[in-house]
Image (cartoon, rainbow, N blue to C red; front, side, top):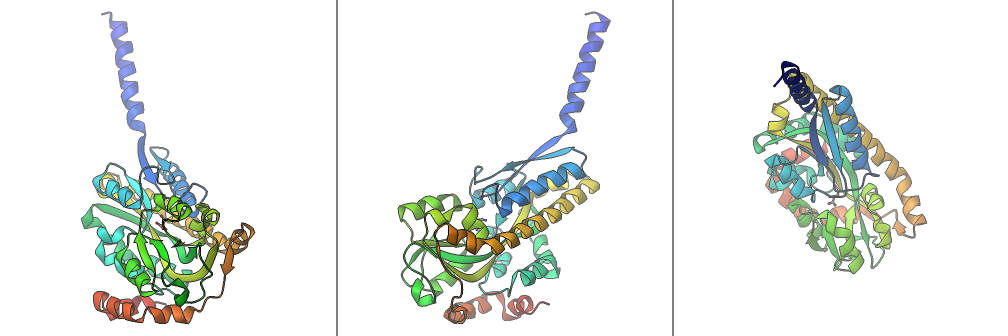
Length: 323
Ligand code: EAX
């Protein structure tokens, strides 16, 4: 081979290696659509990571549970077959049981309270508990306060829920509490919910306005009640080994990208909460805005006593009373 040819070959080979290693591609997934509070969250995250790493990292975004439901995505992140996911805490108890305390109904007064707890010492200590399980938890985001929908009747009090068959997340705290309301609980992964509602496999489900709107549940549910029975956190999870491989500066970039993304996600939840009732009414839903909240709280008396035993009353009070 002529020397010039060899040199061209070498140059091409070096160029190929350099460009191949110039960008690392990672995947992030959500179970809701791109046009949603979670979509805004991961789109912002991808943009911020790219910007803050000068394009050395690219985050590919997957919507609508196209890589699997939330439990499958969290498993994939733990195994490292997928680097990142933004998930609700629905499946989290299987991985980090301590996080269950955040799923207790009527724990948070409002979104400001929940956000302050999650961004404060309690929430930040909880993020660290994901590390021994193979995750780097980058930041808390949210779904918002969950409300009930069904196809049978307006719900004003817990008595109206008795005997309704409702899809719940695969979350033991939710399931225990909703049984306390008298609901027949049917845990199910999110990607199956629309069809289950459409076919009448279940009568109802519960989710924040952001999810109800982006999943178009108004097409298959007549009644919405603003029960606000539980706050639904979301969390940006990354495979721990993938995070550990990053340089110190890139680690900071990922963490900051997740913080900015969480802010964008929460702002969208606020916007959806502001517009949701009018939007869903316009689409034909019957909305009960003022449910008898005290009765819903009272219905959970016995379940709450159980939770106090399980999690420690002092730990629950620490969250309830956080200012
Ligand atoms: O995270 O499963 C659920 O109801 C969740 O709220 C939904 O997947 C969005």
